[in-house]
Image (cartoon, rainbow, N blue to C red; front, side):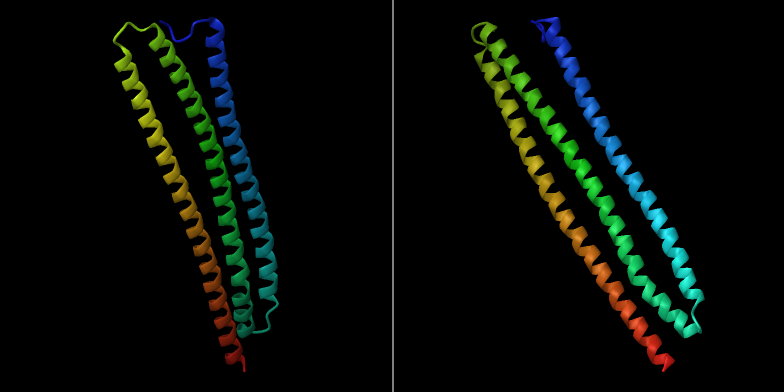
Amino acid sequence: MTFFATPEQFAAANKATVDSLLTLANTAFASAERIAALNLHTARSVLEDGVANAKTLLGAKDAQEALAIQASLAQPSVEKAVAYSRSVYEISAQTQEELSKLVETQFAEFNKNVAGLLDKVSKTAPAGSDVAVAAVKSAIAAANSAYDSLNKAAKQVAEIAEANVAAATNATVKAVGATTSAAASSSKKKAA
């Protein structure tokens, strides 16, 4: 027995494979484009901020004022770095989600094809082979169950990682804010 009964079935299977590969490539290219655009925007912003910060620092009247200005510039810089990190993480997470959906779709299609093939085999199989077909179906069901469990666990891990990233970035911004405030207060006390 052949897996593809007709050339049309073979052509359809090949078309589905090519479509899947194109979807995968388009997803990867879209992600790369988003990362490249983010990097270009960030580089432009860093350059503009650097020039503006240098001009501000050069306008300081004395060392105390320069220290106060420098301390006030730290918070926005850290916030922008955190925002950049979040954006990279979001793009990565979205890409991973899209790829996971593609894999899930392919896995479901594969299972459907295998189930159809097993049904055909069981109808044309010699007497007494019911046990072997049932064992294969049972193994496939167990593999599907394991895949579902693994997929659910991976999604939970991703959710936990996302929560941890958010908590860590918020803590970083707060810590830098507190440090900046303390440095500014210290500069003001020394100036007085």
